[in-house]
Length: 326
Ligand SMILES: NC(=O)c1ccc[n+]([C@@H]2O[C@H](COP(=O)([O-])OP(=O)(O)OC[C@H]3O[C@@H](n4cnc5c(N)ncnc54)[C@H](O)[C@@H]3O)[C@@H](O)[C@H]2O)c1
Image: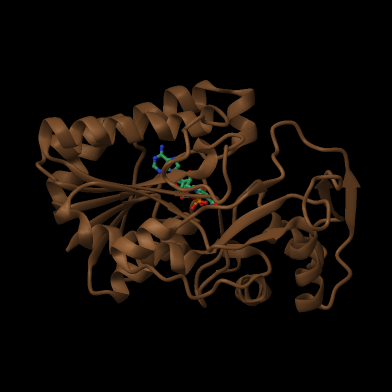
């Protein structure tokens, strides 16, 4: 199948591209390179540099490449930034998604996968968070994803656009060729590894008095390849109807456990500074993924924190300056 991957020069999109190509699909990547990297794009994929704010550029892309399906990763995705500047999210993220969807409809494309987020669940009533938990977005970022989920709901009804919304927390880990290289980096695992590499002085832990096994927050980390596989399984099942899945690896890891494991893998004394709790954080966020396991047979294979961090460390060790090494 010819698949358009928006944001395919970014972290998750570049790994999804790699896995799509491995599965025999043709891929065209559309990315404005604001966060993405040319070198992250698989050599067998075609990269078109452009911005989703430019609807004419999206039309031109569809006219030239005629994708049969879309995986939509391109978005701003910083919760903190969205609290500071909400219209980058409630405006830009939503309008960009809507531009893309308008073109999708006009070109008669019927398959769409949305990279959604577990930030739809603020202070969830139950853990693990499955698809029955009430949606209360935790930030303008989460709300912007929910808007797009709602657009997809209606476009299925009005135009038969089949979609899958995949909601996840923290993607982590790397393949041999592709890893996480954000600027600024806000995710715990790459931040801890940057301390190990001497690129940062310390990692700050926000709160150590949560009702968890060691007092630090527990979060769900999912290996980026397992995540990419879920996208491909969802794509292949779309002809049977639209669907929504929460994705996680079934176990949460505490901030302390992540840092300890990173220390043991890197052999470095990663300095951690314990600060007060951060507003908006909840003690435990873990996704319940029984639905996608049951319906699509998805089975994450890299589920322990050690192998996830090990794969990331391997990539960071090989690319100490990230993609700018290439
Ligand atoms: N990383 C995570 O842990 C995580 C968790 C849940 C959801 N998500 C979602 O997954 C998606 C990918 O996340 P990521 O970590 O790979 O992010 P990323 O920033 O690495 O990738 C996003 C890519 O989209 C591109 N992009 C951004 N705005 C664009 C625009 N207007 N036009 C064209 N290209 C644009 C960027 O250049 C970048 O290459 C995002 O939508 C994010 O909200 C990520």
